[in-house]
Length: 201
Image (cartoon, rainbow, N blue to C red; front, side, top):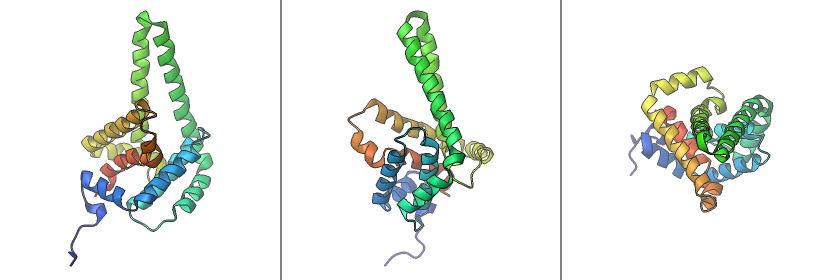
């Protein structure tokens, strides 16, 4: 007989919460990952795609009844213009820093140090971008609230960003060996890591 006082998945802590939420409706997580990658193909749609993924991810993490494709497409359309600007800004900064890294690395000599600075800037950009992921995707979150939440749960938030950055970096460095992982859960795994410091309570 089930325990009537058993904790709901949302009340579980840390890694146990992560695994429980991921295990629930796993095919939906795979479907969300696939639709996200598909809508990112034009590249410039990164902002709206992340926003739509964040909304559906919130519903799945809460175990709320949601029709994945309908919810994703409606959110993608409704936030297309509002989320396009910061998505393009993020992509532009990535292109600028990546170009600087390769340019100065190719020059060699003393310019190698500048290449290292560009690479450090690229990592910092992704760290900040990953941290702001909830604020840029969840409708009730704002940038100010995101920074306050980050400071109030600093150790967990920093750990979540580092782990998420490591997962994304591993997928890039180990390509194409990790293509099956990328196609099934490559985006939702880091996304859930970024969620649980703020959502596990």
